[in-house]
Length: 125
Length: 421
Image (cartoon, rainbow over all chains, first blue to last red; front, side, top):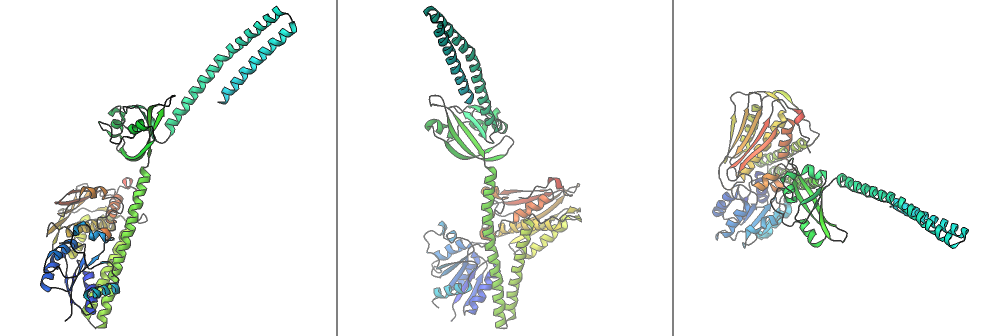
């Protein structure tokens, strides 16, 4: 059975792009337009990996990340952060506290092949 | 210096000549009483000669002293810096004209009263430090002149010593570096803006690249829906580029406003409102509030559309990223008085603007949106308003929202246009 990836991003272009990329690579894809919807969706579909945007309305990526990591049923799902912020530290700031760090942090714009390879590595494919 | 040496030389020559003449006369006469007589006469003539020379020399020295004093005074006044001399209690003993012109001496006799309107000495007072250790100290200060100009200054304090080498006063010299600071700030902001812009363009390129990838994927599998989705992405990102370029052009000095007669500001407000109403999501409601009686005037319609679009886009962004509320309202208002003065208002009930942001809001290329923002939006707003002889202001309350107000006279008054820097 194909592994499932959940894309949480408020930018439609990003959702369409990543979803086409993952589907073409043989994955199943779900998507959500903000952090709130993303957490709801994650609880329903139990994805194998989540890609999470940082700057989003209705629950930012940082808040969504904190909730995903603190929810015992979702805490094990690997998370790839996609950020347009110039410094990765902007995401890892004090707000993350002692929570485990994400599996990967990728800069936007993405390098398509590198990004896909990173996702495959995390999923063990 | 040269005059003094010449006078001394002349005096010496005179004394030598008088004594030589006396000695010669005494030798020629040859007798002892005559010798004594001639010698006394010679001494008398010498003393009389010296007595004649001394007052002249004293006058010359006095004049020289005055001249030096005048030169120093001239220098004191001519230096393009604020200079004051202070005693240990920080009383101003002397100040140059520039200092007296720009700082209000009616406020008191102390430097902290005159320069800063304070009632006690400043913490880390440079003058006190110089009185204490006799060293030169410096710092950067921001002071307000009596006519309300804020100046960035480099301040030096240095000891003024008496003949015994003791400090009997301290001189403060203030050099105006406001323009340097402004350019420095502008360069920093511009650097940040260029970096931000490069990132924004990269993001748009990724959107285009993504769109092409989606179109190709759709074509490979003959999937029309995917092709259509990809093509929409391409179109959206082409629009983003075109918007960015348009904003940049609006900011540039080269772009001249095109004023047209019989332009109705209400029509422009209506157009911008409908444009954003199509785009904004369901969580943000856009309202349009117009006068009953529209009035036409002379405006730059493209400029006004751009101005309103930027303010609307900012209001939408403020509401979109507000975690405190799930629904928001934005009202675009247009009011005109009988004289034709037009007031646009864009009111949102978003998070409001913190004080530290509002201070920098109209600085060139300032943005709160990280790499998503270019800082161009408010520059465009300010430029277009200036071109119309109008002004931009805003009111904001944290947690309640922000209202931007643009007031424009009906006929552009070019004499009040500010040069766009």
